[in-house]
Image (cartoon, rainbow, N blue to C red; front, top):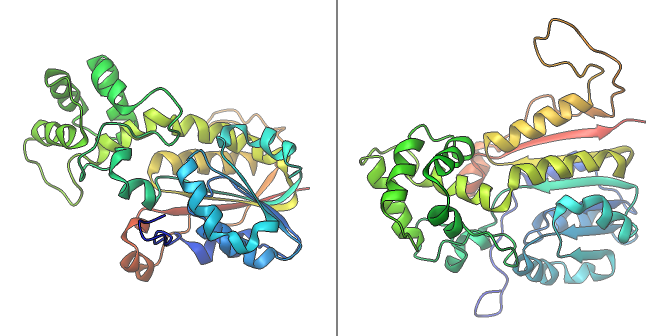
Length: 312
């Protein structure tokens, strides 16, 4: 909520494409694994009401409070749960959402998280180095920045940030410890890059890498995707919106693997067939925002949507 009691401005990314891909219908049961501020959930509920149900999951309690207000008129059809989507199957069984007609993941950081300075996600606002989606977890960005070895810091920045200057950044971070705020860290990264400029801020990749490491985002995504197969009813759909190449690669590989009768690595000399496909790809290529959407919502520019359907 804002200070005046109004809901934060929220523009769901790839909203039309996502909802059309999920095909919500009156009476359907749908799961939003990252309900966030409730934008996608509201659009789904509009299609499935009055007899349908939606289970909204989010690890961020603050975001759930906003979603609860935004979805107030659908109160009887919504169950909101403050949990990690790594426990997706347990949550669905607990709340009797099994099997379901559609599952949605909208990954990444919400506008509320980015715009709340004290959360420590942004390199443009002074705040403690936090970056936790779940304020109850122990590990923070400060723990990594000030406690991890130079080698491990470099690995995180390289693997999760895809930053080619990772050695220089890790070295300068260690040299400037302790680093207590977001702006301090941003200045150190800028110094490490020697004033090199591109279309993105020099600290963008490093901050993204730390956020991914703090929240175990990639590992959590892999765990949750594996659980969707047993939860979807035949004809049910899985839709995933990702925002950087590492997430999209995991989603693409998962969907293509589950849609294939062969589990052998690409380019293998011997085909090891025998896998029964569980998914059908609805879009072989990722769906990207239109230029019009990017113009109206700059945060959508890196988004990619992939959709698959559960086979019998």
